[in-house]
Image (cartoon, rainbow, N blue to C red; front, side):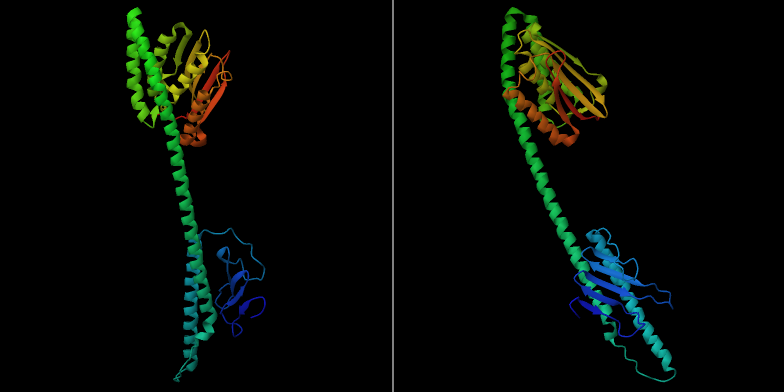
Length: 357
């Protein structure tokens, strides 16, 4: 025992007992090889990285491997402890057999002192202590990660509820206003143009029949969203007359593609309210969709006043809520793109992963 630590050496030269060194770097157990039995030299290191075997029995410092995971370190420590225990039992058995062979026919009492195997016992104690410590540290780390994951999940769930509540609040504000104007238009047209009033009434019924289930669902497809948008556009075409020209250019093969509910109607409503209605002569609106690079691109393009002039509080809030909803549903796999339309107006595109149901 000195300033460098504790060193335990075999009592007699040529013994197969290991040499144990305990210092600030950890524990090093070194056993010399046995040329007679062909047993190679062994070296075992217990330090902050766990339990590992040295590359050889030379004094050179072995290159430390990457820190193993806690369960793997526990298994390694248990395996090494079991191996040393078996070797210790074999050493004791071998010395007893050798002593009996030397006695010949004489009766003698052979004393096997456990003190000769104190280094092995000390090693087993140290090794098992290290295994317990490593296993406990791994368990604490796993519990901390589980708690952190639970907190993240709860935060994401709360954020999702906030965004859904915002969308529901916006929908609740828009629908009464839209219904009031539509019913007022129907009442007026009944007197001056009954056929147009009848067509507007049929489109209103179709809109309500399609939109009510969509508002309660968390997932739908593009075809069902178009069932909401088409009667909505027909109603507005009756109200705005020649000031609105609308068309839907979507292939029927894309109707089964997954698409988040009520987002397409929000884009159409936003384009008409903030792009076309403020323009004296109105304009055109086009809904289109395509698949590119495994993503579904759904666009609403208008020839209105343009996004810069129409950037009101309602416009910004509506698009911000759509962007937040896309983030919660798809993460970084979805996006909302806003670009100028040609020759005038704005093009807003929702990009989501393409998946047909």
